[in-house]
Image 1: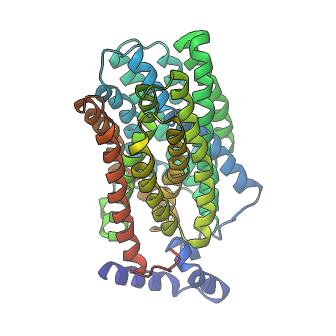
Image 2: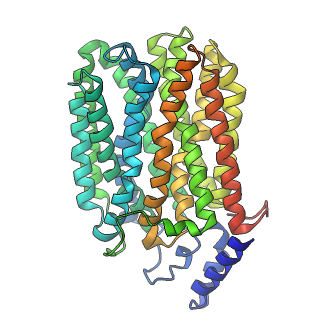
Image 3: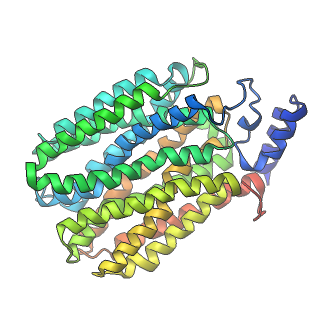
Length: 446
């Protein structure tokens, strides 16, 4: 294949100046690691792969992502609560735009944050983002109108998320290569921790202190996590000024990256539909509101193990191989469990657990497979450019599903099929992207 030949020529050009053990290690790890960074051909030194500073960065990233993705993974709770209280006069589609716009801002904002991170490092970006995310949750309790929620959660919170997300993810990649899947998996378990704790916390707080004080209490929990993140997340590589702030679409000349980006786009179309609608699905099928909160926590509990274990496995069998396997599992759980679940509490719990596990690696491994296709010092730019495209998936997926629900007279069949088909398309894209690097060799570690 042309893209494979180009990749092999690039690999030869980057490895011919290496010698001895370093050259041997590069060739030995070729299939299991990032193409260029594996030998660190640009003279940035070997990856630490551990040590106090490296693991403190992972812990700091975990704190940052607990705050950010813990809130994102609680979307189903907010969606269900607002649809029956402040925004009860609005349909599922319009309410979905609030949360999808927040996701869009988080990922689309990476187009600015990625090159700024490359040039300036994480400090100012994460500090500013922390302030915005904290203020977003404090002010959320004061919202009464649709545009209030859209501005506070979608715009302010989404922008804060963008400033936190890219530095927190990219800094982990500065310290790990061979163990990158494991390290990233550990960092991304944080979203599951927040997604377990926050819904159960809000379930208890809403009837006790009301919506406003519940969100304020959550805001101060986020503040503690974000303070730790700001103290611990540090870059290893020196700044590289002069990076582009606009997306660098020339990177899509690499067909492997093009199909990888499309794969993540459709993956996120499928991923956020269950996260956003599983709570309302349970309530609309006769379960209690308390169960609607709890099923979100169950899904995130499954996701906790799904974020960590596949990351560990990916270092053994390859990052692409692992994400392809987990996508297949997502497809099976959606069509075999969620579609026929109806009012069965047992099947719904089984779906939430299995889908949580299968989808847990989606967010954690996606940045890793992107990093596998570029040089380490360019990772922020590649990541940001990729997620410029992916962000439109996060923007449109939940509202499209909500509109399908509204036009189906409350039937969730179309919404579930939409999520499942999105995963099928994502699977095809990742298979093609992998083929651009290693061909159709099923047993290749990549």
